[in-house]
Length: 212
Image 1 (cartoon, helix red, strand yellow):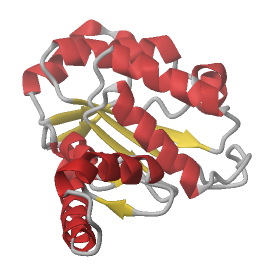
Image 2 (cartoon, rainbow, N blue to C red):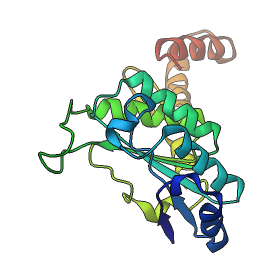
Image 3 (tube, rainbow, N blue to C red):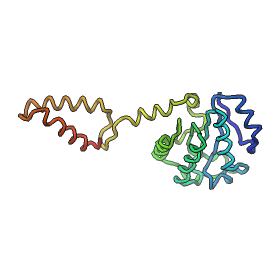
């Protein structure tokens, strides 16, 4: 069960009622960065929302929030907001493209490139979030069934980043070792130098070439 809540104007008693109900995930959306919060959420206060998330976390809740991009924020401000969220223990973060619902709502300032969403996802995990959902079509409910599982997103990210990254190749250590072994066996049949002598040198040379 995930519960999406307002900030309750920061009233502790109402926040405590949520904690007592003990849903699996409690979501309170920040929506935007501090500088434009009041323009995006007229009655909201950035610091008050952070306080709500912090109170929930201290009460033992798994906490979640969402931010819309393309509404006038700067990338550096998004990263600072992410840092603020980590500082209050937020577990799950969703980042998605803002779309104007009606002409009465704020206009879209820019359409964020998927590569930027991917970069922010990486930054989010590096900052310490347990789960980061980031992409143009992401909304707070996107893949929400996975948000309740502690460690699922972070473990998935660790699996992705454990692969060796090279400008030319994408493989893991097992692939590299198997290829090197085969190559050295073939090479040793055609040159006089002992394998024990050239093994370390060859490995270092290939590793440096592939930026491993």
